[in-house]
Length: 93
Image (cartoon, rainbow, N blue to C red; front, side, top):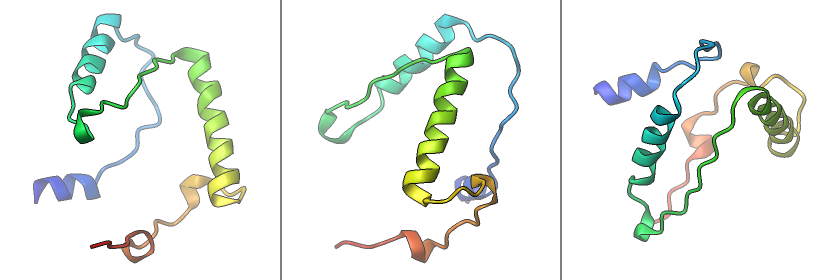
């Protein structure tokens, strides 16, 4: 059950080091990601690398849109209780 325990006990990291990541490392990671399997080998992904201030601007816009569109609330997303499995899971057989 190591995987299940890892998933259940995961935590979000919101404070990162200021250390720059070398371009070659990012390219290696993206190259590995593009090799991942996809449904019917469609490979529907596109990767965009966003850094520094632009990253923060985009993150703020996305959070604002999510809060308005999905949750229709102004509450802090970190304060939202987790949904029960029965609230988010439907079976289609």
